[in-house]
Length: 212
Image (cartoon, rainbow, N blue to C red; front, side):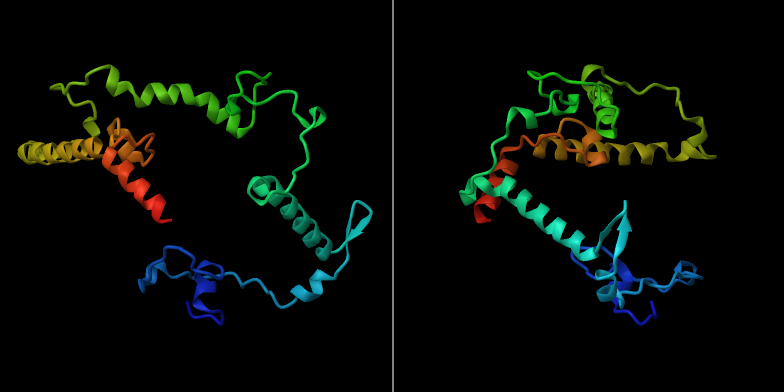
């Protein structure tokens, strides 16, 4: 980076609030060409420039005011209980007649959702059956290796060492599973931990919440 902008702006658009970055001088990682940065100098002019939309003229300032009012209303909806502000009552006319299945309102009428959330929800049963497959059946190693393309010349000379490393890996995985109450290896590898059941973890979490 050797431009006129500050380095935080060149790296992450203006701030470094928790962004992860690293520095390298390797020539292969330096861009051969780069786009010109966005020009922010005319923002004051653009804020007052009239924009025509559906035969109605709006300014950027009008849009800002709209979002300001929207955020204020949303703030009332979220915080009315602790701020003692009376939120508008949800009337029958405002309630949806049906709900998508991923909201799991079993006592309400539902409809089949074709949105991305609905599609992901439809895939959930098959995912649950796959993630618990190791709990339902014991998978034993066989003499035949199914992935022949992974074998390299001379692999038999390293089988003994590989078994030692695999044993260490299994012990480490089991230790983590027992310590945090994790059900299977897939949760650790994917980072998708469904539930913590460790008493020690629960105790540490409670102490952390109290400190906050």
